Amino acid sequence: MTNANDTLPPPPFKIKMVEPIKLTTLEERKNILKTAGYNIFNIPAEKVYIDLLTDSGTSAMSDNQWSGLILGDESYAQCKNFFHLQSIVQEITGFEFVIPTHQGRSAENLVCFALNLDETKIAVSNQFFDTTRANIESIGTKAHDLVIQEAYNTSIYHDFKGNMDSNALEDLINQNSNVAVIIVTVTNNTGGGQPVSLQNIKTVSNIAKKHKIPFFLDAARFAENAYFIKLREKGYSDFSPLQIAQKMFSYTDGCMMSAKKDGLVNIGGFIALNDTNLYNRIKERMVITEGFPTYGGLAGRDLEALARGLNEVLSEDYLKYRYQQLQYLGNRLDTAKIPILLPVGGHSVNLDARRYLPHISQSEFPGWALTIALYENYGIRTVELGSVMFAHQNEYQEWVYPDLELVRLAIPRRVYSREHLDYVADSIIKLYKSKDRIKGLKMTYDPGLLRHFNALFEPIGE
Ligand code: F0G
Image (cartoon, rainbow, N blue to C red):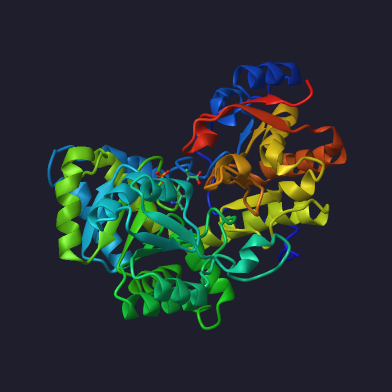
């Protein structure tokens, strides 16, 4: 069961600016899907009614952030907004060096470079996000996921389903002398936005220290993770989200952040760390790819909006509402016996497509089929975290399918109201009643790496 949460208290903000949305007709959506090659990423956003594709870069900024844009100092080097951002990141993370980047994946790329990753090395995570994995694997380094087994079962309750299996980590390190980095993703996006406990971060940190392996946080959703710790981990209920975040970072050597999530901005990211050598290597490299180290591919105004967003995201009122909003949607679906990943995560409610569409085999992409059906019937855009994203061929050219076939309903921050969530819940419940009519898909174009962005499909049997 989800936490009892049948009502949703009003948000701790009011609306000052509106953006119209419009529901297209069924006929229009059928045509749009055909033209889009049945790939949800190819659908014009204007033709989407409720867009739950991602919580990344989709936040509504506050009046405080918008007013900060006017104060953008667009000097090439050492702009004042950098120093504002630096001081806030230093306060939250405790790290000395702060390096802005234009988004999370560029931070990942720079960290991989600075750590000298190559084909002889291994990188370990609870679960790598797909861009992190792609950055690592594209230089030949092996990427291992060691999340606890409970993460692969959508109906088992666990307070911290994002935890890393620390015994498996010790074993892997004992068997391989070439583990070059440990990255814990908070919250674990790939596993449904599940949190990692402070105790687990501490245990992983001790192992990393013992074996002298750099330990980084992928901190895209660090504030949501901190709030789960406050609610669920013994001893932290009286701590502020900021204090918990500070503790999370204190056990690590550095972090990379896609600020498009808990930075509450539409673009941005950063790296923060203490190691002078790594810092210098990143600085030297980034002038070729990102820009000067005090702007990292961002305008001064973007840095200002991010500095302000990082302050706002740690507000307890905001985090409480965010948590309740997710619980509310999850609870509506769970009560109607829709198969979802339990417990509900920090930024997304995830449908278990294998249980929702048991008649479609993984080779015919049940998760993808469900995303198509939700758009076709209701104009709702979601994203598959399943076989299109994660299936791969082994050394015998056989397809290996992921354990989880999820459809992620990622909730943008401060964007949708309870009425929108009710529309989403009602639609999913209605669709479930005629689920047997949903068909699988055939992939007609497979682009290889990160294939969900560019793959094309045809419905089977049409
Ligand atoms: N790490 C995590 C945990 C992420 O969720 C993402 C992005 C990234 C890194 C990469 O950051 O997009 O700024 O380059 N996740 C988005 C999503 C795309 O929809 O979950 P980015």
